[in-house]
Length: 213
Image 1 (cartoon, rainbow, N blue to C red):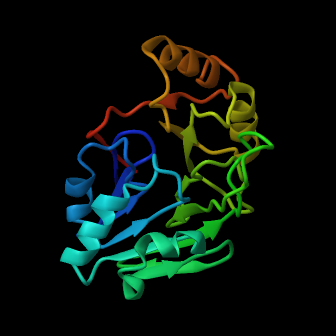
Image 2: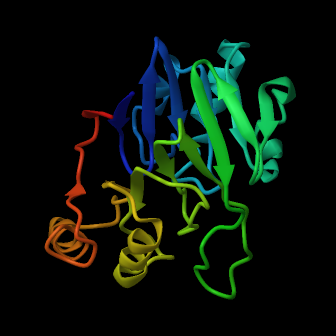
Image 3: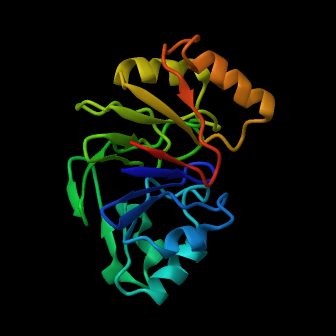
């Protein structure tokens, strides 16, 4: 499986000639190009930094074979293409091309009590790589590779470290880092990396570059 990291929380998985995009959001300037070659789009939740609404709707209109999988709360966002939208929730299993995907979790991490809770799911691909969206939900199955959010109004470094300890992955790959300055990225690497709180190297993949898993 090939993982290509794009800006913020957007990643593309490729295997056996098929590709799946997770969370092509508004921070990914090339969202339309990222989506262009995909067989399916998986969305963890409704926030704009994870959902480029215009780019996804344009792709759905241009390609009737393209499918979107997301929490039911996003159905209205793609109401013009109801046959191409499938709501998903924790416990469901998907088979997309040669990918086997399980769905985990239910709610976005708390930002503040004044903000209403929104649905958030995580996706485990081939029992190998887990994208949690904006939540530190611990799946009840092994997670060899964990995509770890390292910035956001809902998270703090200590919780990220405890999340890695709870999941116990073999490898952690940084996502959701766009709010960090260069100093913040260095701090996250030190505190969450091998010599820090997790005991694992924090793999940082520049936008547009790939990793073989």
